[in-house]
Image (cartoon, rainbow, N blue to C red):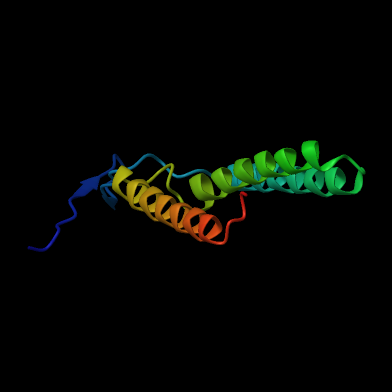
Length: 112
């Protein structure tokens, strides 16, 4: 069964494909997100050269990496604006990869 895409007509008479997600961001917002990602990267670099102990450095870098990952996935991969099914597939794959990684680490007795 083929999926059909309905067309809508705006007030100016132009036909546009109907979107199921939210409106995509403007180029200005992409630049803003890029600047935020650059600042977070700068914070990661500064933290690594600051001579902070590993007990503080590693969680700090991990938190910054998670924030950057979420921003890239949500905005640049458009998961924030597309159908929720795409986000579910992405999260399922990410969860599977994390579980596999933990199984490998446990099998090599890294946590002992």
